[in-house]
Image 1 (spheres, rainbow, N blue to C red):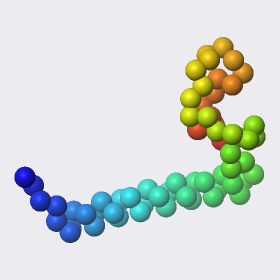
Image 2 (image 1 turned 90 degrees about the horizontal axis):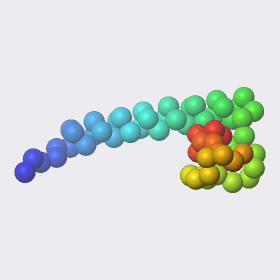
Image 3 (image 1 turned 90 degrees about the vertical axis):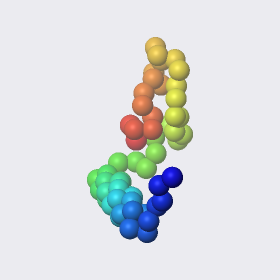
Image 4 (image 1 turned 45 degrees about the vertical axis):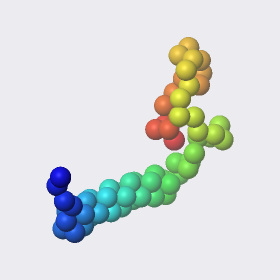
Length: 63
């Protein structure tokens, strides 16, 4: 069974921190450009199963 060393764990933490920083920077940039924090409808759906409706959208990625 392979062991996890402190070096490997620290390396992963560095990538996670970089990922969080990039996402936070992108979110802040969009917010400062006037993009709403959530959908203008007031809620966020993870899934909408009716394909022929006005709500058929990628809620989680559109806002």
